[in-house]
Image 1 (cartoon, rainbow, N blue to C red):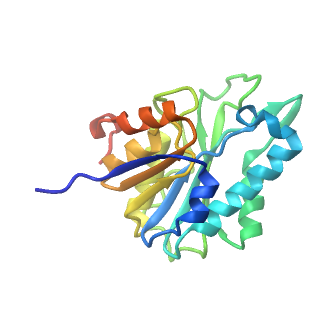
Image 2: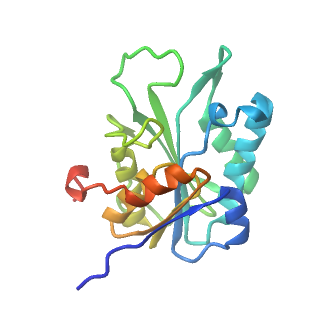
Image 3: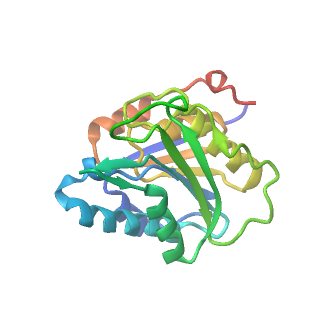
Length: 222
């Protein structure tokens, strides 16, 4: 009988955990870094610097065979548009890594007017070096992010797209989300047979992340 994939959720500070736990071979990251509304004490410039540095630390943590996939939604902050893809690109350049893909995920139908958070998200993948060639690269634009188990979640279909890429194009065995929230990426990763590990500061969110179950059939996973 096959052993079910593991899930571990640790209450702690993401970057400290990365510093204390070197990446194991076969590990890849799927994550969404918090925006300024979650770290208001930093102020805008402080948050922007923190975001780039945090993304860079995630990238430098990767093992040689791993990739990092970031799911990020642009926002307006005091009438200024914050392009989080640009911030991730800056981290990729700072780390000396390569961008594997940059996809767009529609959070609302095209034509939707948004006043705060953008109606789309970025899905960006980076690695230490260019991959040998994607056997199944997947779509460049995902028309629907999918169900969101909580308000700040990655959409289930976006997680599915990320996990499909890992399954088809990498040697990933474990998915790590250092900012796991309530565990959507971890739960979807388990449906693909990946072990999953998440880190989260909030005890309440940790408890939810340990319990979240997403039926593989509901994702349409092949």
